[in-house]
Amino acid sequence: MTAYYDQHLHTHHSYDSEAEFSEYLAHTTGYVVTTEHFDVANPVTGQTDAPDYAQYVAEIDRLNQRYQGRVLKGIEIGYYHPKAAEILAYLADKSYDLKLLSVHHNGAFDYLDDFVAAMDFDDVFGRYLAELEQAIEQNDQIQAHVLAHFDYGIRLFDVARGDLERYEQRLIEIFQKMIDADLAFEINAKSTHLYGHLALYAYAIELIQKLGGTLFTLGSDGHKLAHYELGFDELKPWLKAQGINQLVTFRAGKRYFVTI
Image (cartoon, rainbow, N blue to C red; front, side, top):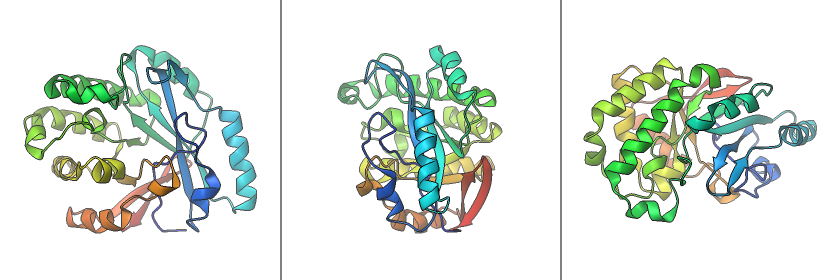
């Protein structure tokens, strides 16, 4: 099972997905890892949304008896700084093969709420970058493996490379902190293919490589089977063209490099 596998998937254990493990398992002979949503004070639902860890592990244990240990445990940690203590308390007694670090909301709204598209780009992006930096700075305690969808806060905007170039120094500072925190950088297929942000990822990769960063993952951000390994056949040769010849996966918190 040396083929590269999707590093960002959700099932019914996430508040916004109804997908089943079996759907993904039927489409591969390799590993499947799901990264279920953990979002404290989620303004979308008006509550904290956390996977029931006991139920999640029990289902994976049952599946692994049938699927020869191919199902791995994961979580997507939606960081919200005012609730840092709650986040750490939830994570304290749990183990995962893969932990993604994300920023989805600021307590008042999720960055994918429709009205965000009508807001001022600079106000939104400046606020989001500050929150992303806070999340990265806490990774010595969170111990996530991957920084997910760096562009989540501006997904709803029509953004070109030039818009990000105005923030180059700020992005360099954040990416350096990401590298120092030993976080891999996720190429998010939903962002590149559904939100049209491929050029933004090319620019981010360029900055990260100039800083000496070498850890990259590829994830679909899939919430349903139709998005499983979204665009991977196109993204793998594209990544090679960016000078990325291997991607990293995680099992039991250990890194495994896969040539693409």
